[in-house]
Amino acid sequence: MPVYIFTTFDNPSATIGTFGNAINDTGQIVGNITNSGSQDGFLLSGGTYTAIDDPSATNQTVAQGINDAGQIVGWCSNNSGNHGFLLANGVYAAIDDPSTTNGTLAFGINDLGQVVGQYSDNTGAHGFLYSGGTYCRRSIGHQRHLCREHQRRGPDRRGLFRCQRCSWLPT
Image: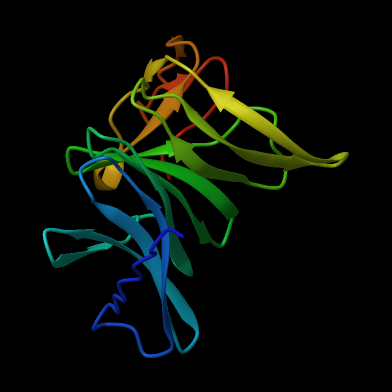
């Protein structure tokens, strides 16, 4: 009969709970902690906890997946709804499916950088696979948008460029 070993980990910043959501081949773990009224993401690497808080989040950040390169995906929420994110090399990039009307959640990332998740619209929830693409123009707060096609139009009256495919513009 196999022997199973459980190792407990508790983020010291958590007042209610610690949730492990994904692990990569190097043993890095991402998840989220729950405190009274908020959720915050974390990375546990080499015994050290690092907070993951998307700069566009006002309500919560949840880290859902990590690949062997240390790229992290998840989602955050703010006054405009839920938004997927990719955290790579210290830079956050928004992942918002162009078809969404009710929010995007990123759940996993593989070693090719492909992201899976869910978006919702007026007909219900739909899965998505994000592959390839490039970043649109660098925006405010170190947040860039991942686009399927790098086509910009503009500049608009403020001198900012919009992505032609998804019309995303930093706010």
